[in-house]
Amino acid sequence: MFYLSNIEHTLRLPPHLLDLPLHDSIKGELEGLFLDKVIANLGLCISVYDINSVSGGFIFPGDGASTYTVCFRLVMFRPFVGEVIVAKVKESDADGLRLSLGFFDDIYVPVHLMPHPSHPEPDSENKRQIRWIWEFGGENFPIDGTDEIRFRVHSVNYPPIPLVLETEKQEEKEKHEKPDEQKKAPPKPFAPMVVTGSLDADGLGPVSWWI
Image (cartoon, rainbow, N blue to C red):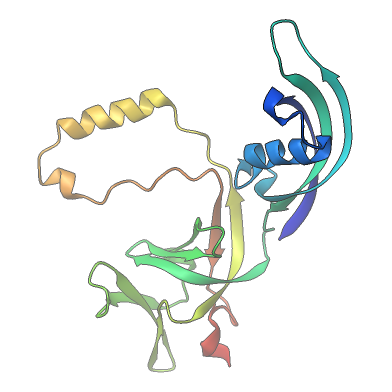
């Protein structure tokens, strides 16, 4: 789930940080650049683990900052396909479940990867959401937000960043839609890393099912 990734980066260090210890100021700048950011095919940056080397320190003409070449390691969250992880339900709708690890919320369990057979029903405690029910042995087993959910990683994807032009086209389209068409659920915000999970196997789903 967590990995150390070696990174080499050219870093511009602002002049107001030059009175601090070099490694402290460089680590602070690296955290500002990488912490909570997704790097394609590497995952989500959790922390700067250590700094292996610092070289350079050049000051270019007309620039008061110094530029360094820094080699360092990042702690990355990158689940692998087939890994079993425990999360909590964040949202539940007709498309399936959205799960959260607390620090990462873009985990989706689509309908075809829900326990089979399952069906949705209105959530009596939250009218804006639905609740999924697993049917087994003539009984109904609900999936709700009160229990931890054990899921298996089905895939990890890094969607391309949407172009500004496409966003503008979508906004222009919405301006010309009829009022009843605009009542549809808004599109999900862009996520640079999306984990697809599966609950369709023995031992998966709410932990209380298997205790």
